[in-house]
Every structure is written in structure tokens, then in C-alpha cells.
Amino acid sequence: MSKTSEDDHETKRIKLASSSKSEGVITEKISPSKANVIRIAGQNYIDTEGGFLIEEQTKPKEKEIIFENQSFTEEYKCLQCSREFLSSFLQKSFDYLVCDGCKDSNDKHSLITRTDAKAQYLLKDCDIDKREPPLKFILRKNPHNSNWGQMKLYLHLQVEERAIEVWGSLEKLEEAHEAREEKRIKAKTKRYNKNLKALRMEVRSSIFKKTSGPKHEHEFGPENYNEEEDIYYRTCLTCKFVENFEKM
Image (cartoon, rainbow, N blue to C red; front, side, top):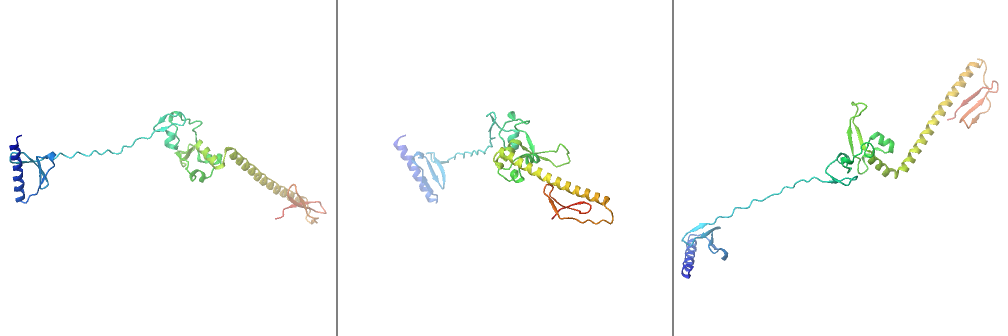
């Protein structure tokens, strides 16, 4: 483009700017990289250099692409075979990371009722429900009577692990079992001896009533104590009747 043509274009811009100012419109010069673009009242116009302006077309805003957080399924590693798996019965029911392929329902991964768990491992309700983490369970209908309440079934090995936490070891648990059994036998023997003693006293009293005459009055000697049977007794000096009794 010749110098004369450039001067003409610059003259047109000056005239246009002057005309805009006279009409109260503010114009702005655009950076040199956009020499043919001018801004009037906040709007960009393209100078066609032919005596008129064309409104500049703004580029459409690019749509924001929002990526929603996608939930990814967590993978677990089997404690038995070390393979990864997405879900299994033991994982969902008891948080125990063993895949369905390694599940041994008859032995290692067998289930136990709450009643049997408490009796076999000497656990209290707080040991099962309150101690962290509480033992997980599944509900099943009672096989003996469907009208009864549902049974709580626990993973046997988790119950055993909890018993070790409570008692310290399986050996100490066995010692506790033996101590309780010994205490139970002693209490049972004591009740038996007490009942036997009462029966003997009742028999002896009935024999005396049948053999004694109506006019006979016993004249008992001094009291004696039978350590073996833990009873006191005294003997009639006349008929040799022995009366047994206990002292409170």
C-alpha cells in the first residue's frame, strides 16, 4: 500500500473519531496488533477503510466442560489367594477380605450363633457389641421354629479372635473354662450333700415315731459334732435314739 493511501486511511480515522466525540461517543484506540479495530462505547468495530465500520463479531464463549466425579468401585485383595476382587459374601457381610472362590463355609469360614459364641468363648454382650470394632453379623431365620426371632450369625474366626483379645490367649480361655467347671461341680456336690442330709434326718425321725412308745420321753446326752457329715447330734440315754440337727 502506498504512503498516500495510508495517509488517507489515517485521515478517515481522525474524522470518525472527531465525529464520534462531537456526538458524545467515546472511542478508544486498539493495540497495534489490531490497527483496523476501534472501540466505541464499549463495542469493537472493524474499520473497512472504505468509509464505514463493521461491528466485530465476538467469538462464542466456549462451553465449560464439567466433569462429574465418577464413583469408582474399590478393589480388594484376597487374604487367601492374593487376587484382586470387587465384592464377595464375606467382604460385604463381615468386612473380611476373602473372595467367594476361597470361601470355606464348612470349616475356616463357618458361622456361629450368638448364644454359642458366648458359651464357647465366655464372651459377654459388651465384648461382642461394645468393644471396637463391634463384631458384624447376618440375620437368618431360626431353623427350629420360623416363628421365633431371627438368629444372629457371626464369622467363627472373628469370634475366636475377639476371645483372644478378651482372655489373652486360647490357653487362658481353656483355664477359665476349667475353673468354671470346677466351681460348678463343687456347687452341685454341696447341693447334693445338703439334700441327702435332710433326707436322712427325715427318715430317722419317722423311724423314731413308729418305734417309740407314747409315754417315753427322751433324755438326751451332750451334743456332738460329726465333721464328716457336717451335722450335730445327740443320743437319748434311755433308748439310744440319735437326733441329728443343724445349728444356724
